Amino acid sequence: GHGYDIHRLDTREAAGQPIVIAGVRFDGSEGHAPDFELGCVAHSDGDVVYHSVVDAILGALTLPDIGCLFPDNDPRLKGADSSIFMEEAYRRMTDRSYAIGNVDVTIIAQKPRVNVDTIGGGLVKEAMRDNLARLLSVNVDRVNVKARTHEKVDSVGEGRALECHVVLTLELQT
Image (cartoon, rainbow, N blue to C red; front, side, top):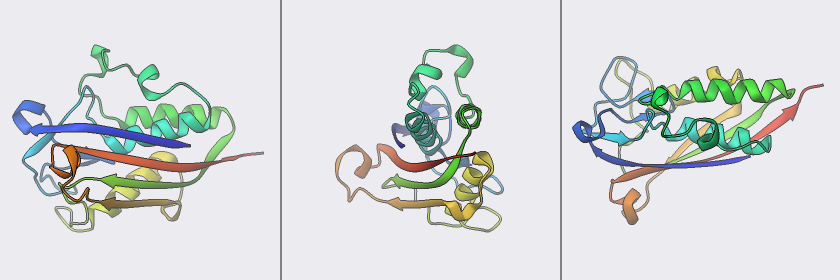
């Protein structure tokens, strides 16, 4: 399956929340990424990686996309932690007797940088991999997280948005 997401960035005050990527908050808190001045404009927490993984799982299962399951006009989902979307996609996957084969994530962001240390030690990208592996009940060696800039081209390259592509395989469990 393939998943894609993009979210606009704005001041933290205007967005009302920090950026969250693969469960890692860019707010300077312990175990998370260094503080970053911009926030993610989204109905939920706007986690582009989790949203892309959910769509990839749902697509591989030939199910409706994330927007059909979790509409962005549902007041119950305002500011929601996107791990709940991951948990639901995982449930739907296992209910159909599938498991993750592997997950390949490409984050595209001019900023914030993700190849940096977390507050308290460890790499941000490794924390992202760990979060994905935990939510998908798979070894981290089946999860790849890589990041690219957009070479200062368009809204992503100008630091006004960030996006993500995910490709994953599912394995039928017999």
